[in-house]
Image 1 (cartoon, rainbow, N blue to C red):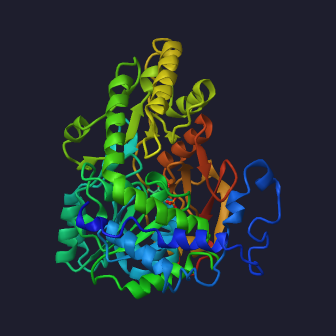
Image 2 (cartoon, rainbow, N blue to C red):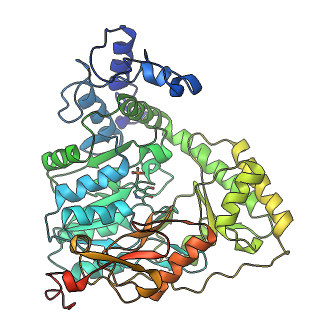
Image 3 (cartoon, protein in one colour):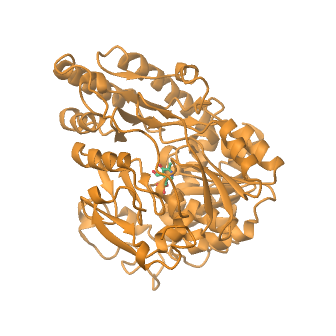
Length: 501
Ligand SMILES: Cc1ncc(COP(=O)(O)O)c(C=O)c1O
């Protein structure tokens, strides 16, 4: 046990919930099912156990927005486990955490330096906060067709070019497990009096093992949101918002936090955070050792299969340390184009022939995630599924050619808030080249926008949208297939201000 384990065997919120329900209270408060006394097909077809523990905020169980008792204690234990000063239990995922940090830390027109391959929640946070993005292009791996981290030199250059920027935002790690040199970025940002905010939706495991890349808090970042649900064992929708130091005002963070969460936070979700934190704080190192050894086994076996390839640590060198400072080896990024198939097809086929559900399929890769619950059997099922696909498809079609669009991002001419608020009209996709987007369009997953409000719609963006539609990647947008919302410059009073008349 190290000094941060101290008290980590406790689960104050979970214990209070169990004690309350076991006391068999007369529930004349919400929710209306009265601790599982009212049955629906949910309880009939799945189980009633969740309903029995679905208490709202009875006396003695504290208030998430003004914690004075068991929630305060549980959040303090989580902060300690993650080497942070403060923790908030988000029941609105890292999405809620990112909205919270933008609104808490940035005012309208404040500049924030960030990579363009951010999740849609970041774009929404820019719209809501009114902050102005200074986008830095991430490094693109054109072979795999994925965006990696951002080269620290480029981020520092952006800091020098924008000395009045208030914050730097970093993804730690990307969906595919790649991290930038966050420690260096933090050092340089703090030297310039800029705060550092991070998206750790895919990095909660970093807090519990010394064999993974460094966590945001250990790099000295000021605020982060991390999806405990994605790889540390809590229920879906639950994240920690963590802060450290004096650069962010924690009472402002708490104020913004309450704006983006229900006033009826789900107690089971919160209890799952309390329980996952205990497990990972006490046993995380061992659990993640198991995950890493399974990952190493899977890499070895998958790389014997003709037509597929999964990279390991050698990838860092291959990318010349550019945008790939380190990787999380529990994420298997499997290149599948050697089968003559797109990642989308392999994603569906693995489910059909082997009942294996991977995290996502992209153009060239599929992504399989190893977590605390992963066993060797799970990975053997994946390996056998890939072997079967290799038997059926390898050589038959030859290597699939990657589509010819550029993996470049569109150019912003208007900040996202103004782009979103501007009057708009809906046009055919093919007529929108050169127009300014009034909406966010993305393939989901990974949920990284192809175009956002205020950006010029390029022919590459259109090609990408059409390609995703055709090949079966899900495209999320406001308008129907084949259409897009653009800014109607003729009706926009700010058109002159932005030189867009
Ligand atoms: C990079 C990234 N950031 C943020 C989020 C949002 O996290 P959550 O699902 O916990 O709200 C996601 C979700 O997939 C993500 O991929």
